[in-house]
Amino acid sequence: MTNNILVFIEQRESKILPASFQLLALAEQLASETGGEVQACIVGQSIAGLADTSASYGAKKTYVVDGEEFAYYRASPYATALSAVIDKADPKAVLISTTFMGRDLASRVAARKKAALAIDCTQLKLEGGDLIATKTMYAGKFSATFRLSGSQLQVATVRSNVFAAKEPQSGVTATVENVAVTLGEGDGRLKVKEVVASSSGIKDVTEGDVVVSGGRSLKSEENFKILFQLAEVLDGAVGASRAACDAGYQPHTRQVGLTGKVVTPKLYIACGIDGAIQLLAGMRGSKVIVAINTKKEAPIFKVATYGCVADLFAIVPLLTEEITRLKG
Image (tube, rainbow, N blue to C red; front, side, top):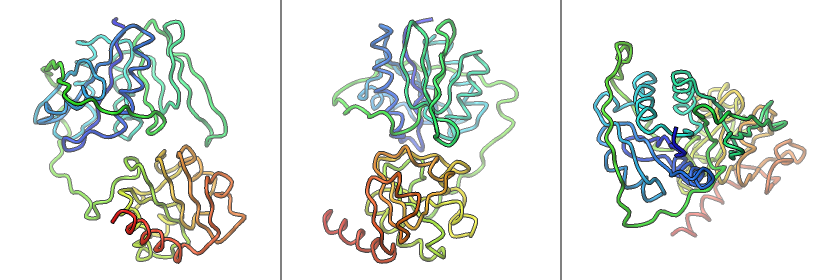
C-alpha cells in the first residue's frame, strides 16, 4: 500500500462536477500528512482531455478508464473500473463525492476491496495512519466520529461544499496512465439505451452552488416559475420541500430534505418554507441561508443567516430584477 490519496473524479458529459475539485484540495491536505501524492481516477467515454483539468487542480497522476461501455453510469461496470484502478494505484485512501453516484459506487467498491468505509463525511483527518471521519447523524442533531483503520484501504465519501476547491493552475500537463478494464459477465446485464435531459436546463439541486427552494406556500406548479427565474440569473438550482412535491408542484427529484436530497450549497434561499426538521436536516449545512416567509415564528428563521418576513411573491421578483440589473 502506498501513501497516495486517490480521488474519483465524477463527470457528466465530459464536464467535471465542482465537488470533485473540492476533493482534490482535501486530498492534498491528507497527502501532505502521509508523504504521498494526490492521484485521480476518471471513468467515462472520450474523457481523456479531463486529465489536464484534474492536474490543474492538484492531481499529480490521473488514471483514465475510457470506453463506450462507460458512457453512462452503471453501478457494476463503474465499480469494476474503479476497483481495477485501485489495484493499479494501491492507494492509502479513496475519496468520492457524496452524490447518488458516489454513495452507490463507494459502497460497492468498499465491499469488493474489503475496505473500511465512511459515508457523507464533513471532516477528514489522519491520525497515526488511521483516517478519522466525522459526519452528522439523526437529522443533524449531533456529530459522530469514526476511526478507519490504516491497516486496510480506506474509502470515504465527502459532502459537497464543505471543503473549498483550490484555484486551478494554468499550463499544467497531466501524467496519465490508461487502464484497460475487462468487464465481468454480470457487468453488462443492464444497459442504458437513452438518457433524456430535463427541458428546463436548471441544475440538479445536488450540483448547484446556489439553491432556490420553495414550499407549499407557492400553491401551484405555475407559481414556481418565479423561483426558476431567480435560479436562472444566479446560475443555480431549484429545490422544493416534501410538502410541495407531495402536492405535485414539483417532481420529487427536486425534493430537499432527509427523505429527499441533502444539499450544502454556498447559498440556499428558502421561499415560503416553514422548516420542518426533515427539511432542515437536508440543507442546514449550507454556507449562507436566506429565509423568506410571512410567518416570523417559522423554524427556518432559527437556522437562517438572513431572514425576511415578507410575501415571497413580492420579494422574489424584485430579487430577480435587481440581480439581473447588477449583472447587466
